[in-house]
Image (cartoon, rainbow, N blue to C red; front, top):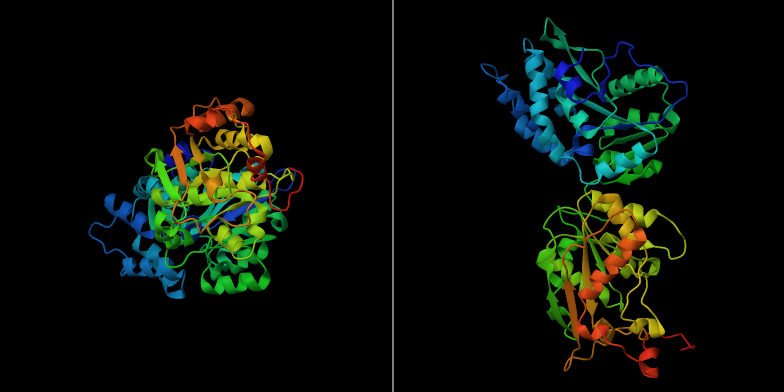
Length: 488
């Protein structure tokens, strides 16, 4: 029997009791088995759950688990160990006589704090599985009564977790069914899968621990998420995906630092003495939460101008750029390491939009150049900017605010006709102007109309000279074409 308060608050989530209560559908389904600690969460749930149980008075007159803070600290750093799991295995003894209702209340109390520990990119991954019609199953050693409220808040369909024995509303100090860990976790999953008509060969499993190898090897699509060293080695050997849900795909991290954190101190005007920067409005960008920065495109040097904005923000900015940039040696690797999202122009692939959406759902900043490419010829001098609808569609998908960014003067530093910027112009560096505007009001129902609104907002951030009619000279027109272009 699941706690009444849990089922009342989160009716979608079914806590499996191991007694054959699952119902098989007419057709097999795909399930997604997700581990909790260090996979879905940034670390261990134990300290949060322990604090909630203390708040419910469950440890009054009793000892808490000896050395738990040290154990959880080592767990966060290294992952599961036999010593840690031995401690977890004997934990039911400490609960003997506890009222089940009080533990359920502790689970309810801990749930919001556990939600705060969810890895930022995890909800996006799970959302894609839901959109595909997959069942999302929390599969954890953590006691079911403690974790069910959290699972309900996150919208899990099922919970497969360790169940403590109970009698007359109190815990007996033992375990009902399997200890849901390692081979015990696999046994629980297989039993539920048979009852629920799950196609294991088509199903996914996500875990950080080498001790989950039995489950990972039993599904057709295993994923190593934030893997410990041993699982990482096995995953590489078996060519399983290795993922990290605290950052975008391809972004490395060492000592808690991303490449952005290392490069940020170097991205300052003094590093580019051949340009004179005038940047304003960065304070309009929220310090946290999803944001779309939509900028116009005048030069390859726009990347530097936007990097100046990112450096002042103090938070990573993921940017969409054409694939050619990512294919370039050194620069391409750096672009991917910084979280750049490559775009294949003309391919009609939705992958870039999906990656950008995942970044925004993780609460990150995404920079987009809605024009797609630098305008050529007379189009470059047109005061009316035209953009593609991707930015508007992304805003509609995520609800993220769109802030217009007006960039001006970058073409004087690096015209499209040049293979490199003019780094020798130190005596009279051209001015580069960047303005960040207020969020654009969007209807979020018509992508074409919203795109017009976004481009109009960008134009308001450009200097007055951008709106004056201008008949370009032949030399000015030539500077808007690539160096190998002949028909100007």
